[in-house]
Amino acid sequence: MGTPEFAVETLRALVENNYNVVAVVTMPDKPVGRHHDTLQASPVKQYALLHGLPVLQPERLKDEVFLDELRSYKADIQVVVAFRMLPEVVWAMPPKGTFNLHAALLPQYRGAAPINWAIINGETHTGVTTFFLDHDIDTGRIIHQQACDIAETDNVEDVYDRLMHMGAKLVMQTLDDVEAGCVQPIAQDDMPHGQLHPAPKIFKDTCRIVWSRHTVKSAYDFIRGLSPYPGAWTMLRDAKGREAVLKVYGSCREVQKGSAAIPVTLSDGTLYLTDIQLAGKRRMSAADFLRGFSMEGATIF
Image 1: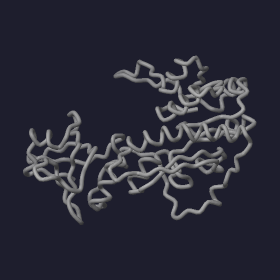
Image 2 (image 1 turned 120 degrees about the horizontal axis):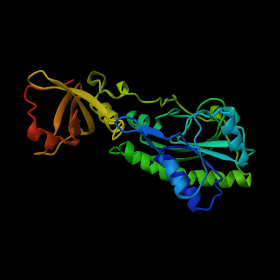
Image 3 (image 1 turned 120 degrees about the vertical axis):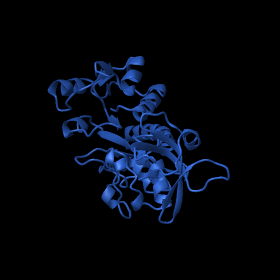
Image 4 (image 1 turned 180 degrees about the horizontal axis):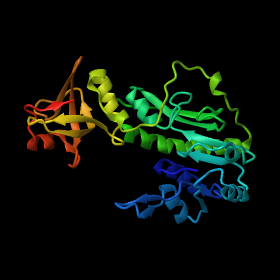
């Protein structure tokens, strides 16, 4: 069960390694286009159909027609990757349970955006976790975990790709161990941890850079923790007082002599914006931007 590319990698691994995938559950096709008159299948559906797998796309997960169809496949176990919260009638259905792949080392970073928040918070490592579903989101008994480093230069795309491949392998290991009856799940409350960091869904307002709240390091982490998607943003006011949204995809704390970047002065130093997109324009390097825009008299706020 899943929808985005993160889930496709796991499905691909299961298909290519000859696991018996009896059906795939994903979101209904999404209206796209200027008039929302075209339906776009999720990446998971596209992959499933390409490989002849049955696809279920329920509007409501408690719909009896969907539940009857899901039961008809008589799955031994269900695997969830990047999907919405399941009702008990679904996750309790298979005899060997339902487990989820989460892109963090639970119990840290429970929630919808674990990769983003780990980078925003300046973490130096993260990982993937498989756990059995229960009534509350991301709180079930942990089956397996695998850690990986977060480099100081990594953005969300870098870590996403790393965890996507790592997670697919962990799902296969989990399936093998559940099938062999050798898993010993651990309750999250029994695991040692410090302060718990949540990973709530990210909205547009979440992505605004409030410069007064940041040091150079925290602003740098905030920007890379939202790059390339959904993208941190700030406001730019030019010398004539015109204002526009400025998305920021990259920054650095030091610039080489002769390099072009947009400086932002913070309480403990200067951050340099290097990869930006002005509203209505294409994404570009700060160097390209400054060739056509003078920062004299302009303000970033």
